[in-house]
Image (tube, rainbow, N blue to C red; front, side, top):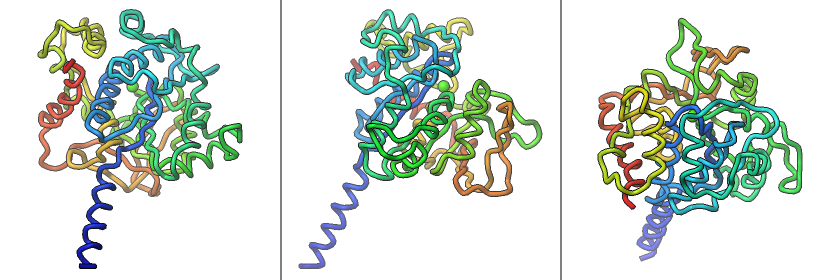
Length: 330
Ligand SMILES: [Ca+2]
């Protein structure tokens, strides 16, 4: 009998461990590319399924329409009060084909990015209130906010420095940026290009494991978004509209999945779709060019840039599309 009780207790413990939603802080450059919109929609899809909890959504862009677009998407999915932070004072500004349009056409109450609190303060406030080693930070934009977070000192939220706070509260960081493999020709590309100093700082000093996910051919091979245009088109939908506005000039109806891959990995891990390389390190040059090198090994640096053996990219794309489709089920 006693053994039975122990077994049942272990089973319940296992169930509760499995059922625990992943606590996420989502940091995005919601402006230049549209996969950020898809990634945040996908994240809300994970929340709908009980797999994730969104603690905060953060903009790493000085584009004033980036934070309101985040607010539009959070509001559209019925979560209008998720805290939103924005990079302040110094950072990257890039244009957006969709952010102003989406911010003006759909409900949001931030107005402009400058009305959102300083991202580093949001990070400190949220992280200090979470259990130790529990938060997964996923960044699909510039690393400006995370670099600034590491430089913060004690404040009213925590006596810890930013470095200590990240070490204590963050489980790991998932970072979309760069390309793989690049042994021959260092690439100057993507999220690492506009603020290379922040990338070097975070890649070298961030105190937890970093899982880098990459773009390029790897992400192009997983085209997503088409499902948004195959479903009922009569209800206003900011996710569909952002994709439509963005893809119009190429006359396409799907797009690469770079930021969606990062969100998937943050919630589900690399299995079953992706191959995780754990040996080596991401070398970031001063100008933001980068190269995955085999030696010396940095135990904190992991990289995903390939599908797992036997995995068909179209299967991954159709699974990702199912998360996006949840935005059309209204
Ligand atoms: Ca992005």
